[in-house]
Image 1 (cartoon, one colour):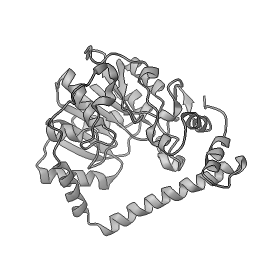
Image 2 (cartoon, helix red, strand yellow):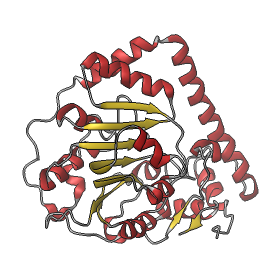
Image 3 (cartoon, one colour):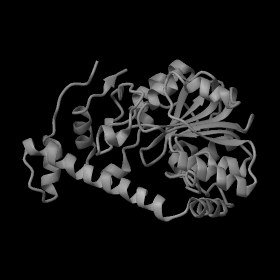
Length: 326
């Protein structure tokens, strides 16, 4: 059932502390307008960039980024597996240090199929790029942006990459498994990355055409470690269209932990930014990566903390939104 309660006083108080003239009653509308303005400005900038910069030039930029050197001297000295996954983080072509974590995990569990699937990716920044470029992985990238998929395809052609397809599609629970099968991926794979800013929980729940050994999935740290919540399923869900603040998205770590157990996965940790959770299939054992609870693995959202929203304020905002308990 939907999570009840509309408490925008917290947002209003936060805005007031930043010298905005807000009242509790005005808070919701005025702060929403602020986020709407930022959202529309970002969209306008992207539109202008597409109009001005030729696609071939932007694809060439992606290819240049791919030519960056990866870290050679790794892992860093003095690391202690008991201290968590955050110490292994670094971003080569990932956003939040995922490259280092993924590299560390595979250094412990090894490669088998060297196959992957990633939902929601960037041509110059995604969790599978390092595996594609340096570990000879093959598989499927999927995204709702035709432009993004075209950039990847152009850059891959220029690089001479084979065995990796970037497919533009809008995924639903109904078409997810068939879409993946139609592109030649099924059965055991080494890696799955899932980041669609909305239906992440629901997609992982129905995914059964592949069995990844390692799963990286985004969670909503603003909900905290104790509550098992997700956005309700909506086949047309778009994060910033649903709420310009971006707060309404995804699922809590607790929800994903519970779902992972049902699917035969155990929680191995999270990145230090409070963005991604990492799960290992139950048959993939290593003493260096013990099973953690959501409370043990949870990390708060560094970006939102940096914007001045405390963990308590984030949770208060989340409670005002129509999440569902799972």
